[in-house]
Image (cartoon, rainbow, N blue to C red; front, side, top):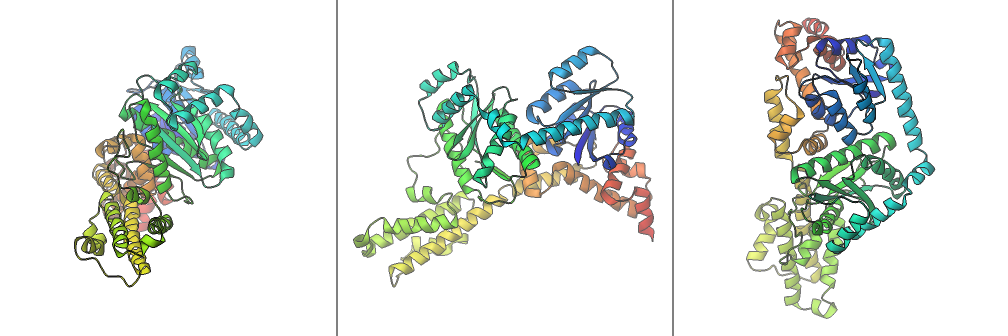
Length: 524
């Protein structure tokens, strides 16, 4: 079922579009509406519809500006321009932005149905083309693109900045005044990567050269460029969200998307790539849902130098290791000193203390207290060492302490945004009755960019911001309908809807009956 979103500053127009057409009977779902492009933008980032119907003349952000932003960040969305102005200049600009459909007010059910049918056929054709692997292969063949990919791979692997900068000019790659961030995209099956690559390539092609791609280490590497640290964060998470949505929708493939640390210098791109590799390594390889994670999610230090001179080698090996990998690292660590040295009590104790220190550091960097998580490690490190019967006992003791540290680290990874989500939900609970509340307001409250917050919220809560807000409002509406004599319009206003008809539409879609029917059912 294709999702449709409507933007118009006139309630009467939105209501007419909403009520004049049998949406679900024709295979469409009207997923939301907004009175202005600025309000709509954050909602669209959250809902990600297939079709956008938008007015041209609106306050704050008009339809053409909204269209321009949507085509840059969500290129799969088909836009229908709606206007009461039969002005060719608007149509001309809309066409230049890729808009194929243009409707004049007032819109009849027949005209709307014809437009939606044409778009539906176009989407079906796009999906058929995407399923054609040979066509996808041909789309990927480009000598210029191959040269750009080779250039990017050399940059990721640490080629001298002066050398790659000179090559960039000859390849028309803009690099001035940019911040950089590397993203790695991985699929569970290697056979899926060709299809994923085609989608990623198509999404990146409309971003004015701000995203460059190559293959690195069996994954798709994307270098995202932004005008500032804040702009870079917004662009990186917007692109990650677009890739997630498009690949899942079109191919049903689950991905791991790892976003490396930001850098202001071209020399730091290789470091951003390293940090993205570490984040990817920390993610479950066979996840049932697409996961987007960045260096902040993993609690990594963000800076020009990702690995300092004072780093303990064993800790670096264990920092992002899985439990299975930790077992192998532990064995290799004990084997590293050789058979003869292992017989020495002093050397064995040295290795044991080394492991204790690494385990405690893993716990500390994950925000925990080693005395609470692994008290035996603290006691043995600060007091007399335990006497072991044989070396295997020592290895087993070290393993138990190390696994505790890794299990704690993994539990913290999943709940790292716990305080952010709690703060966001508390803000929504406090302001749900404000009809003007937007995703941008909540993102600003928790100090994240819109797309970063959208990613975190949907992954941690299991629903989008709009879904959560609507569910909360419907819950409050049921309470008011059940416990008060407020009219439906008064209930709508009390929970944040200026349009009582839209409230009734959402209530019936959510509960299965209109507000009056629900109130009557509660009296029985």
